[in-house]
Length: 250
Image (cartoon, rainbow, N blue to C red):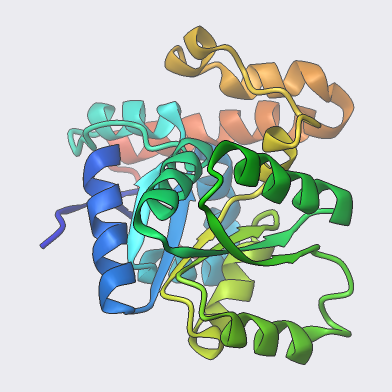
């Protein structure tokens, strides 16, 4: 049974990348429902106000620490998780696993040209990969029933959902039981990275916990509030938890 840590009221699985992949493989083989989520500082701050989001996250079958800041915070609070399992890195590994095992993949989200490029890139990299669905993330309300039926008929084993938070968490909560896909993972802007629209930080910045800063300098006008304000709030919440100060909810 997985050991879970609790940080700021969030449950986090104490899993390495390898252990996470083993759990994912078990869910696919058994075809049991698994909503996967990764936690970073921004999402934890978002859920501090959006209590429904926090509930959805805590009910997910697998919860990984995506941000290095979350790993450091877990150690600071004496409830350590073993390592960072970044969502985009996990997506790469799950796709590799799918290519090896013959699992069926469904890509959903982003712009049409982006999601099609993602599918093309992985078909080129893994010629035997079995991609059974490629759909952009637009007009999903108007096409809701059609999308769900297409996913169900695809008999996919894996769904990668390229929406932002909290949209992807809410969408999966509402629809995962309707589509019959065992492993479902929200991947945010990972499709844009794979397609080359967004650059990922160099490895040294990832290891130093500066991936957020690399993203910030690429889009400062759009990202300043999320990272500068959000990271400050996260630090405050961690320090408050450390000294065991609790404010009433509401």
